[in-house]
Length: 196
Image 1 (spheres, rainbow, N blue to C red):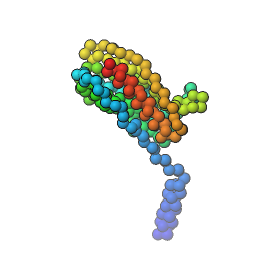
Image 2 (cartoon, one colour):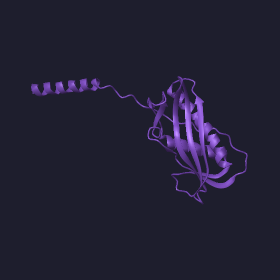
Image 3 (cartoon, rainbow, N blue to C red):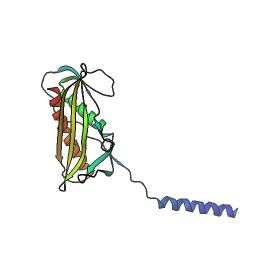
Image 4 (spheres, rainbow, N blue to C red):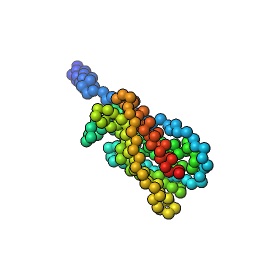
């Protein structure tokens, strides 16, 4: 009986020691983009329906990591911080909200809904990150947009949009807000380009 008790005590001690040997994992901070605050338009409403598609993007910038480029050749992420959804989904949803707030199109749908539409906005997201140049950080978005007439399966517009937004500091919260401000500027430019 004493041998069994001693064995149990040794096992319990080993389990307690084992728990303190490995460091606890830090909880990840999850961030989302604030909603669009673009103003409504007073222009007449078009009957066209726009489908907003998730942009194509590379594997590093297309995940949930908040990406930073400390120099011209390195991509890193902000430690334990991540987005609430993959970047293409965040951008698609933000663009949809911007078009809905603008109000000049009859309906705005996503590529997930399987609803027929007149036009589709998509493209290649080249850059969505915090970039450092000469030691100064800024949010940078480069988006090659394509507007397609779905009834004729014809490209009706193609344009590169590049937006930069300075950071006030270097914290992840400031990075998120700078990327949100850059996304708002991109959304405003895309709405005007696609609706005109």
